[in-house]
Length: 375
Image 1: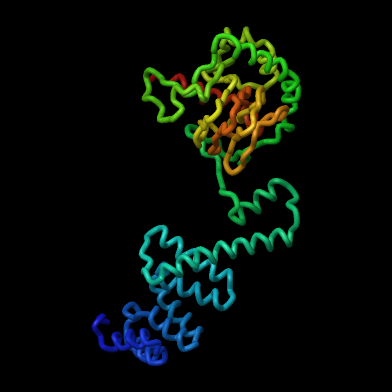
Image 2: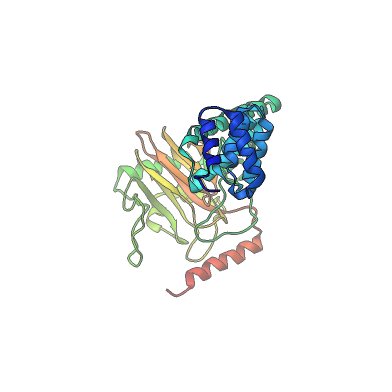
């Protein structure tokens, strides 16, 4: 149908004059003779709604959505009808579909933008009511995992999954943090913290031995990292690339005794790795992913400081005296020191406990083979 068709012009004029009965009569006649794709179904819906026939308005919009299931105008008008009928779930689903379409392709007619904004507000209010209903019905979560599941369901937290940058080992549990009490060898390591702290004090009182953690490699492009060559994030190594850093180890015997208690991986050219990791005030390690999901990273707090935090996925922790931190660094993670004192932890890696001994041996050979490949 041409936009200049006098019947269409008459229907438009009737709608503008709020003469919904005349507009509906004209548009119904057009619907009876025009191909469905040529029919302005949204106009008929507005006319039917103005006449008080909400079912007919919904039917007209449904006809439009049969032709184009992502028509943003029809989605918004259908959502409004469901909202007015008190069907919150249906309204939310249609509003969300319209918002998704707008985010993906745009194309919302300017007169409907206030309704798009209304949809955004409606979804937020509906989500809040839904969350309140759940917690009123269920009470306190029975476990941290239940609490996490409910937060994901209600949109309080974003879902993060393992995304190692180099090597992914399948079918491992998606756990951002582990309970340190699952690793009994950590308890005797904690007993050595006072001696390790004294070693740290002695090191820092003498010649500076910490080096920036992010450095250049002569045969590689410089890392695109704002902390490149920046001592705000620095390390003092005890094991690096599978080799003991003898000078540092000699100065810190208690730290080396502590590391002997941990089940450090043994991979030629790669592991163990262990160092003091220091964050100075103002340091921010930007969000990133570790190389592997076959390991866990352990932190023994040597010197804690207020205002320091570690986010792994959707969980945030602070370092607390006497509380080790064990996490999977293949999740997106970041660390900040928003305080006024430095924070230092003893950092080392261990195998994921879910990986069997024979798999560990094969994985070690895989990683060694990667390192042996001629460059």
